[in-house]
Image 1 (cartoon, rainbow, N blue to C red):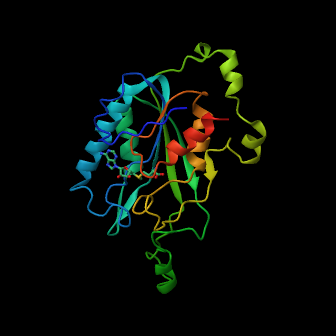
Image 2: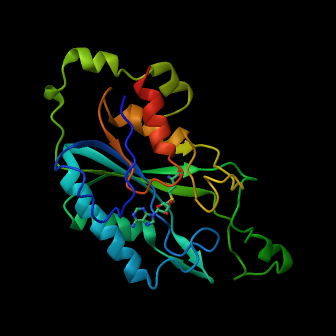
Image 3: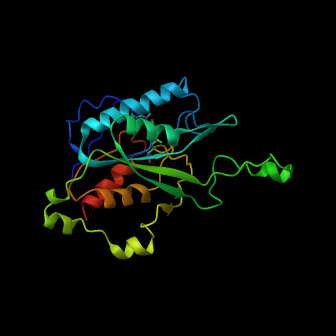
Length: 235
Ligand SMILES: C[S@@+](CC[C@H](N)C(=O)[O-])C[C@H]1O[C@@H](n2cnc3c(N)ncnc32)[C@H](O)[C@@H]1O
């Protein structure tokens, strides 16, 4: 097992060779999300430029047929929603990826952390006061070309076999995943970082990579992807 952390800009991953990565699991900063990234970007266009540059780099470093999974959500700033899910999808398609799937990640009710917008209607129980609370995010699955299933030796397939009992019981087969989110902490590593729960990279690594392969998170944050990639590689 080898873990490598590179301090740098995901828009230029010169340390990584072309076609050297088998899976990308990541979550970019959500534009200027009020709690986590207020004023990080000067404009929405600047955010979209970052996503495009990273998409280009990922197209270069990913092996043919492989997956880039992006956890994203639309961001609400001062009453206006920014269509991040739609724009990230469009950019990845424009940069030559195949848009393969959108999985909706649903968080348990009661774990809402940003705002209880639905309270507005309780105070004003009339039409036009409807602002629902947001309980979901999207896991966008993009693919670079076609995967050659014949290239994987049978022995490696067996070593990387998916636990069908877990697949059935935990309903991995649905494109709606019910997973508890990580609430913000004052922990030194996770402070100010919108970390995703370990279950997300865990499932994606199991579903889209073979044992011993290389997983990249270009927006590493607290390192949840690395942690899961590392612990899965020793099973
Ligand atoms: C949403 S967080 C990722 C959280 C991560 N999935 C976790 O579980 O901790 C996005 C991260 O991207 C980092 N980031 C922002 N711009 C970046 C860039 N240009 N290159 C690399 N990382 C960047 C931010 O500092 C932040 O840590």
